[in-house]
Length: 201
Image 1 (cartoon, rainbow, N blue to C red):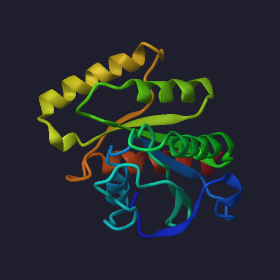
Image 2 (image 1 turned 90 degrees about the horizontal axis):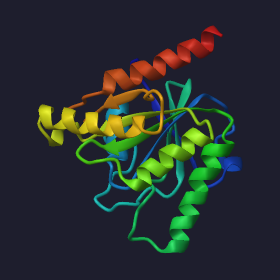
Image 3 (image 1 turned 60 degrees about the horizontal axis):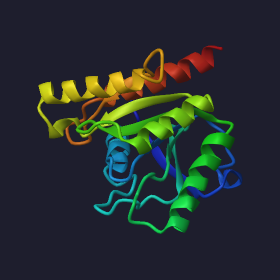
Image 4 (image 1 turned 90 degrees about the vertical axis):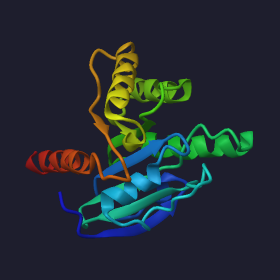
């Protein structure tokens, strides 16, 4: 898939505030500082599309970007950010849950996980919740350029086995680097195949 146009279509905190024009929605979420904004910018070939920050917890709204005038890329707030008041954290969780459970056009949720670490309890709890609520999701391991290939592959295999303790089969898994562009073709190709399948049916 070639992205020729990526337009900011609006921010919201509740489902009623989403853009009125309906398109399939592919949403991206992960723990704060997992590299979500950088990944989104890499996928779209626009370094300034999603706001990147050295400060975790910057995205606090649901941001819609209209891609090629045929689908939305949705940037969701990060979860699990400790340096935030309990009230603010609960508010973010509510915004995330409201979108995931109520958006009629959510087609696929991409959950970003740092490829350098074991899957933490916060991530695993979130994945389990998605499974229980039958939310279609795929996993993107980020920051793949930060370690050597053998170290990275060993860690990702360990994480795969951790997921298989709860699921009979793995969801789709991608490995990415916003710095090198690794995973871009695979992720966009996967989105393209879903859109084609939707159009064929």
